[in-house]
Picture 1 (cartoon, helix red, strand yellow):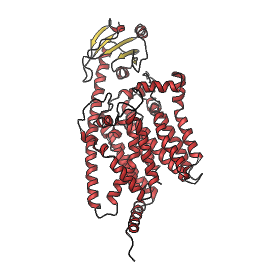
Picture 2 (cartoon, rainbow, N blue to C red):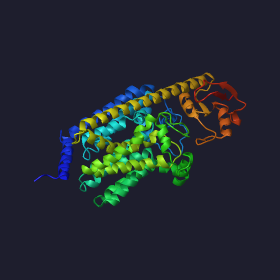
Picture 3 (cartoon, one colour):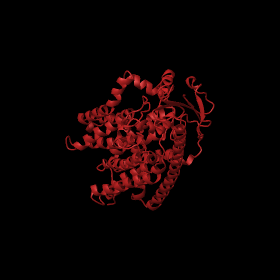
Picture 4 (cartoon, rainbow, N blue to C red):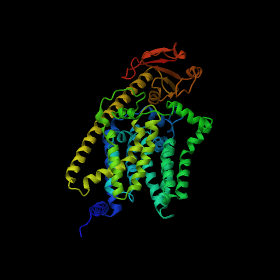
Length: 501
């Protein structure tokens, strides 16, 4: 009797999945694959990113919050202090930015390994390794690996949270306490770094727990909720102490972000992939379409990955990773009117899983077209990595040039007598002040933290300078102060300082 085609296909799929899982003992196999990816991720950061990376504006705000000699920059409503806490072990003992960079690069490699390790009982080792490689090879991931920015750490924590959630709801009650612990710690870390992202991550997890009968367990949901509240506790307390309540802080945060509401920012994100760290307003042309080709093609391997997951009986972990990845992307694609590629890092980390499953299936599945498909996949990945490398080098070079220009401005101010204790206000004051060892205080805008009278009073006690660029006039309080030209920068022509007597 001839075997039916569906039965044969099912046996082929089962054999394919078994071959992925049985080539070596599972823990050792996962550790080897994931360890290689993590080490390569750290090595590339140390070789290509750390040496030339300057300190960005947001980074300066975060790093200024810690350290014994730090002069704290204004901390606006949308920010959370998780990343400042993360770098405190280094900033407490040294002011070296390079030391912080190396620390974060090493820590990022370890975090990538642990976030993928959580999934070892859910997906085959080659799939996890390729997913980690896909995510780690993005220029955004490498660029922000050693930076003092929260988004990549949200990505690692989100990936671990979803994996621990799946293990917690699928295990017998009390059989996997480490999954419950990881679930609570993971969502707490997300909330500590970016409370809003924790809400968008938790939403599909709660809905999944309610929708799937076998997942309706109170303990994982309780751990998920309590972890989110614990992680956001500092932000919530600060909202009551400094803003008059949570709703007031949320309103202020929305105002600073340009108002939250329906705003289609997908095209902004596409243009920003050419190497823009921030595209606001994103009115630039789409000059390098090849840099966004992978983003535009992403839906195809996502859908194919879900189809493969159905055939391999891996739908639950792959579908939940996809849904949570899409959920955390919603506010940055549809609710704000500007773009920063780093915002989507948590989404990319989760969506890398179904994409990797699709590619592994193409390269190793039971098909007579396997050699051709594998060759196409490898060629496509090599081209993708080459493009990512080019964008990364350009971003690092621009960051390094900006840091050198800021250092030149700070040195010139020092020659003009603006030395600690001192206050700097005006154009790019945050970075210049940090480099010069001064406090940064703005008279207006999102970071308004001092009045004209307060700035005038500060000038009676210490050195004060107001920085102005282009055709702008200095504020009224500084118009009688002495004007001094400063080294021009590409983004700050006619740069000058008004120094108080």
